[in-house]
Structure formats: C-alpha cells, structure tokens
Amino acid sequence: MLVVDATLGDGRRRDVRITDDRVAAVEVALSPGDGERVVDADGRLLLPGAVDAHVHFREPGFARKETWGTGSRSAAAGGVTTAVDQPNTAPPTTTGAAFDRKARLARAAAVDYGINGGVTADWEPDELFDRPLCALGEVFLADSTGDMGVDEAAFRTALSRAAAAATLVTVHAEDAALFDDDARDRSDPDAWSAYRTAEAEVAAVERALELADAVGARLHVAHTSTPEAVDLVAGTRHTCEATPHHLLLDRSALDDLGTLGRMNPPLRSPARRAALYERLVDGRVDVVATDHAPHTRAEKDAGVWSAPSGVPGVETMVPLLLARARDETDPLTVDRVREAAARAPADRLGLPSKGRIAPGADADVVLYESAKRPVRGDALHSRCCWTPFEDRPGVFPSLTLLRGEVAYERRGGTERFGPARGRNVCGGRD
Ligand SMILES: [Zn+2]
Image 1: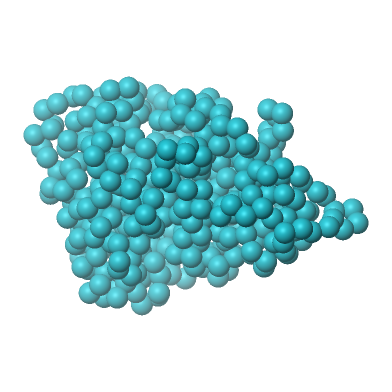
Image 2: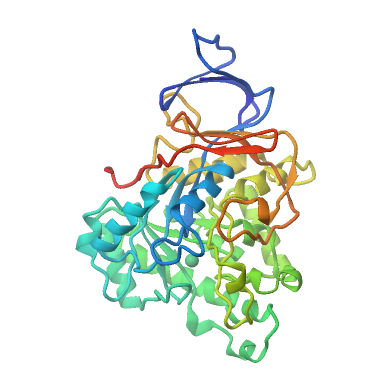
C-alpha cells in the first residue's frame, strides 16, 4: 500500500509505503508499484497508531462493562493500535493461571496489546514473571475498582521483584490515610474530589519514588492528576502519565456530569487542571494514557458514595487532543500529541517497532479526517455507550492500519472493522 501526500506529525508532507506488515519507506515522492493500492491522503494527517499504556478491558469477569472485542474496536476507531490492560479483573491477573485465562480472551482483540501482572497480598510473582508480561501493576496503593489496594510491605516486594526482572512497575498512587473524611458528610458529586485529596496523590507519589529508588526499580506513575505529582517525577529516571479527563475536565464539570465524573484519582480544581495541561504541552507529562475504565450507565446512576469509579476514553483520547492541537489559540501541538500518545509510551514499554512511522517499524498508521466532529457517546464502540466528553469536538480516524491491514475504516459514514488479529507485543513472546 502507498499512502501519498500525507502530513506527518511534525508537519512534513510525505508519501509512506507499507509492504506487508512494515513501513518500507517514507519519502517526498514515491511511485506506485504494479497493483499497489494507493490511498490519497490529500494532505490529511497521518500519525503512528497510539500506544495506550492504561486500559481496563474488563474481561474476565465484567463483560457487561466491556470485552476485549468491544474495547479493542473502540481503540481502533480512536487511533489506538496497542493497548495495555490492567489487572483488576475477576479473577485479578495475579497468578499464572489468571494471566493465561486473560491471554486466551485477548485473542478477540482487534488491536495489539499487552497484559500487566497484578500485585496483591497473595499474588504469585514466580508464575507471573514466567509469562509475557508488559509491566507490573497498576499496583494500587489505595483501593479502587477491584479492591486491590496493597500495603507498603507488599509494594516493596513488588518493586524488588520487578527490579530483579528489569520489569517496569506502574503505580496507582493515592494515600488513603490522607483522604478527607469530612467530605463524607456531603452527597453532591464534588464530594468525591473533596474526599480523595490532591495531597493524598502527591504524598503517595513521593513515597513511591523513594521506595523505587531504594531498590533500583523503574516506575511509571499512572494517571497523575496534580501538577505537584508531575513535578516530583519530571527529571528523574521515572515517568508519569496523564489522562484526557484530568487534562480536559475539572471539578466544575461535575455539576453536569454527576457521578459519570467519578473516577480515581478524581477531577481537580480548574487551576490544577490548567497546570497539568501546561505540563503536557511542555513535556513534563511524558505520556498520555486513557485509564479507559468503562461501567454501564445503570451502574453509574447511583449516589456519589456508591457509584463505581472510572470513565471510558480509549476512543476519544487522540481525537480530543488533535482537536485542541488544531485550535490556533491552544498551545498543544500535533507533534506533542504524537510524542505523548505514541512514541513515548512505546519507548517506555520497550516496544521499538511501535509508536513511529519510520522504515522497519510496524505499519500501525492512522489517517485522520480533515474536519472536526462532535464526540457522541452513542456513536462510540465501547460497550458502555456514554462519554464524559459528549459534544466536545474531535478529529477522528478515517483509516486505522494494524501491521499493514485495516483495523478500522470509515467511508461516507459507514464503518467497518478488520478481524481480531491483535497480538501480545510484550514480554518477548506470544
Ligand atoms: Zn488507577
């Protein structure tokens, strides 16, 4: 296949040749070979498939919320071609048998993927390190969906084991001792943000970094929601990620969102959101990842203290950020989106053939529409059918290729998905 006249993330206009499953050439002008399919990009944006380091595809255990099939098709339709699944399923991915069971379910995936190994008091590290793990974690330092919170002793053990195996550790850093119990008297949706304080995140990140450094472990801090936490990580050997919801929504959105806006960590103040966004723009936030955490609308339709935490996002991350980057008054650039959503996570997860459009790389490439379209929950492909970003502008893919073959295509309003040919790309073996 030859994609002609594409605009790459850095603004260069190039032709891109794809041979079999790889990018073969990126040149100013390439001539089509005999019988080669030509896609005229007509100046539209062509980016590497995004690498989402943080999704919850919910199987096994919660197929009513999401499946590997629905979650991965949602990813493909949003320009994500590699997704890393977190361990808080049922059973949790804390043993070899649980890993193997999830790996079988993951064969339904329409995009490539990684599977993380979970840490609990009774996890089986020997079995897990014998599997093709992507990373350890997210290790929950406070309870979230799945009640997988661990104490410091278990976290220390996990860090030591991961350091010995040269495995990355991702951490959900909140310190429940610093949650504000006074907020428990309230019943409005903002009470969740008041309860799970910014200080609880900052203190937990600081401690996690200390413990990781003590044993030489490499840490990736999941979903940092505060600029203070980002600043603790910036300039160290560790990395952090931020989610679209923490970058684009703040506590003032909870009046409209209600418990749809409940997630962990929670939405923060407008000032903290703006400071987090600034850190994505300037590169202190290394990675954007979605923490795609779907629940059914009926489950979310509950009081603030009983609704489950989490929002979907794998299909809207790149579209929302590209719409911001196309806004001339916004400091975010397309190239920063490319770096934070594709190149940086691929590098951090040890996936050198992902996250770039360069000769020899996997042909995971995404061609985007020229016009913006509003995000509509009922048009997304996640099983949960709602979004906290309803009506916001997005720049969506018209064509997503996974290793050279169509994973998603949209033509004239008609969509089609490719077959389930996703592979586990982590851990050095399938
Ligand atoms: Zn988390």
